[in-house]
Image (cartoon, rainbow, N blue to C red):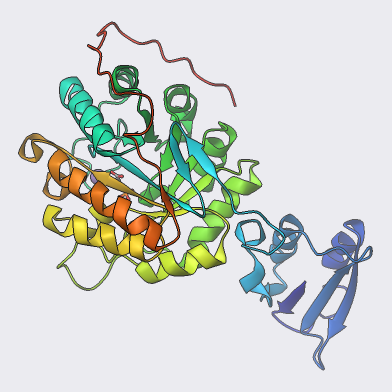
Length: 366
Ligand code: PEP
Ligand code: MN
């Protein structure tokens, strides 16, 4: 590890840092004429540890890590590391598959939710999405149905056999949401919330991590690194568009990042064309482009009556349009060396009448 120092250390100024290095088993050497670079090498020759590195970075004397591009070690794709395969219900997110996630932005109505779940599964989706806890830009906007929304998702899973992913916003809700959901979404607005990332990771459920509105790819990978560091290897990265100067789309879908990430990390990378587009007619072309760029799947907002919903109606596509999009995904997947995981191939779809009795969601202790 190489650290640049803010100034030439005077007297015993570097001593606390050197003491820590000694305790952790590193040999220290000052480099450069002004002793402004510090090299730390493990005595047993093994590479430095990311956790150690951040302890050294905390010293006021340390200006930065000179090999910072290597920092997200655990997310890095390396020849000696197998690509991560994340399974949620029937969906498989990996190096050589395409899986589709679809559903409403927010859970608002039980019958609509079951209609959507059945429709998207019949079209080929393998995972249902829907927010019970909604992050909103305005404090006055609809914030989701909370626990009642989770119960609706549980009933939709029972009725259609489709597993679901839903967002958790608050570390205090992780046990509750993880007690119901098959995977946890960490939304854009929460990407850099370390406390939430660690708490969600410790639930053991797969994490669908969305890129922050203005996060660099490196910051995105470091957020994923936090989940891996907390002992949860099952992370799906999701590019959902970043802030741009142009309002023609809601966000700018960064397909360069998708293409880059598929080579830079062993984690599966999917795309969310809905929050990128902001307008329903732009969702299918962005979805096709993301798959062509190498995405391992898509998460798409679908609603049969978008004018009735409280959140993101303008970007919701119909079940019919989703079926066309799934057909395109089936065609594109083999062209980019991937196998389409088809919801229509799994257990026969038998939509059962929902049992409307309250569902007791058991909190999972981490
Ligand atoms: C969502 O998935 O509905 C959502 C709020 O997404 P994002 O965090 O990407 O804005
Ligand atoms: Mn939404």
